[in-house]
Length: 356
Image (cartoon, rainbow, N blue to C red):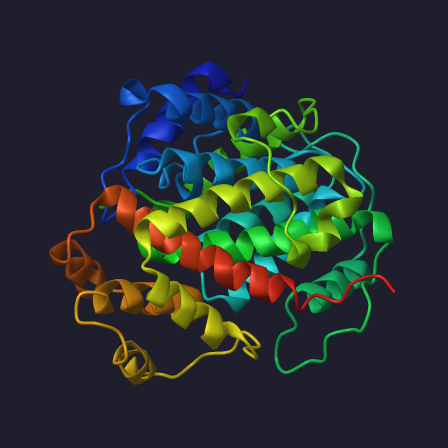
């Protein structure tokens, strides 16, 4: 007889281990969480199955934490017109394209579980998605190897808010994860040989949570109402996703106004225009050239924001250390990275083909 650890025991254990993966800022432990942070943690464990580090890393900035969770829940977790396998395929493809091995590993593991047929660790009835259909969706979301992106979505228009929402969400999460988490979803000091076992446990927790009913919009009360930005009009067909992106983007924009100097925000936005998502260069010379026009005090923040937006995998301890020396605390660091990541995610989301 196989013994399965009860979810009530498994969730806090996984959550505690996940928090040890966060670097450069102090993780907010479950027992010390209060107010908005505590409510978000509760919802994440209930609906996602585990306190996911890519969400929990935002905890030093509570409103940004709520924004990240709101987008993850309403776009990925809540069942809708798009099959979960299609969502996980988009999440995996975007993560690979953004050189985010952490997210690629997690979502590819979920996709493997979803594609393996019925079983105790897999969700309930799910529309069958063939390999050819998934390949078409991946080519739409993040074409690889120089392939041409289709000029229209290869799926019904009703699925657009969910699949575009997942693509934009992962463009955002990949960037903050590359900064604040390690390359693999393992606690420090745990050898990579343990990864398959950890993925089985995580996958079981996530798939178990996915079988429970998830009412659309239950996370929306975490943040005040805000209009949907015009560049996210693809979300309008799904009221809960539209509300989530409106509220989340408003919170992240406000965080940017708090923590990112206007000159730095302008510099990032100007350089996004015309960018197709490719690498800016092997070295970081391009960053130094761009921040040269900023004041000396603004350069550390400008360097971090530009790297997060265009090459988050190039952020190293020295970049964060320079921001600390310039006066940035944990909340400020999270808000700088969140604003820059969302600016890039929204720009790249605007390049997704929409239904004619």
